[in-house]
Image 1 (tube, rainbow, N blue to C red):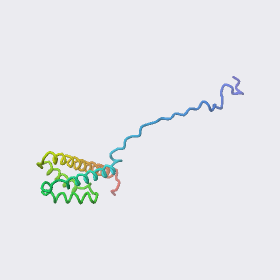
Image 2: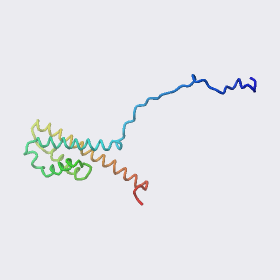
Image 3: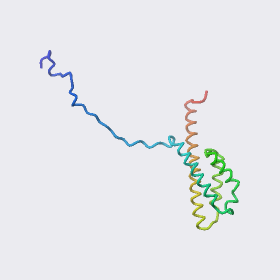
Length: 146
């Protein structure tokens, strides 16, 4: 084409030739670290349920570990399960429950209590591990130390 007219080289692109692409993606699942607060709250709820069910057991079954249970109750009432005191006392109650001889009805109740308390204990360990890992990584990145 003629170099003065630029007929072969258009300077405008028609608007009808524009396309938009929209990509839909499933939201990425939250990591445990992002969910740490929810996990801790769930653990407190599980421990609270276990303690409420423990209160329904016959007195002769609960009496041997009442001092440990009292400490555990205080931790849950204060909503503090991310500490060694909670973990040690929860483990002690679980150990005692494993060695409790009871009839079938009470045994099924003990299984539910043990599951809730074990889940709360696992949650306490997991959330504490996440927090300590964050602190350790920060230390290695020289955050908080001077």
